[in-house]
Amino acid sequence: EVQLVESGGGLIQPGGSLRLSCAASGFDVSNKYISWVRQAPGKGLEWVSVIYSAGSTDYADSVRGRFTISRDSSKNTLYLQMDSLRVEDTAVYYCARGPDYGLWGQGTLVTVSS
Amino acid sequence: SSELTQDPAVSVALGQTVTITCQGDSLRSFYAHWYQQKPGQAPVLVIYGQNNRPSGIPDRFSGSSSGSTASLTITATQAEDEADYYCNSRGTSGHHLLFGGGTKLTVL
Image 1 (cartoon, chains in turn yellow, brown):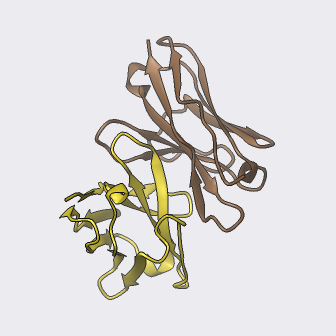
Image 2 (image 1 turned 180 degrees about the horizontal axis):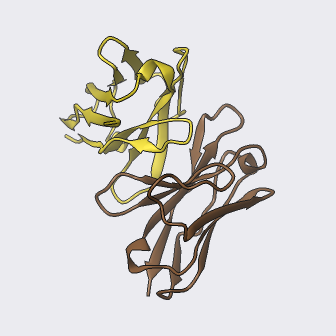
């Protein structure tokens, strides 16, 4: 079955770090570009970061310098390292497969609060 | 502009036709894709590219585009179509991906 499964969310204090994982099955993550997209409570979708098949990356201005996207092809898994977390980073984080983003995971909730 | 603009809310009578629009400069260069999201669930792709439906999406969903505006049309709207709808497209000016703010569709 082709799917994405996120994990790693939780409650973290402002300034802390968290690493999210996105495990893929049914396809090779190295052959597709995959994004992280987040949704704050009661708000819309916001693109966060992308990793292309060639390995290059890009970030939204709101997270550039604090978040790092990477992948481990041997584990067919994508990661989002989130550092210097802020209250406004609180959201459900989804990974989704490009180019049409027709495949999404179920999401993992990150809550940044003291 | 690096934004996609959607009306926050739209309503439609059961069985009628409704059109949800998405406006932005990037749509002059890139197709819009459309997603349906119900409470507590991940988004689901309903239209991609020029006017393509993924497997399993009813043919009452269709898409179109003109200039800087993309549209999602639902004909013979059903109660289960009540949801939030988001457009997205590749971005210009260094933005990989843009999302519209979403439209909450209410079926009366």
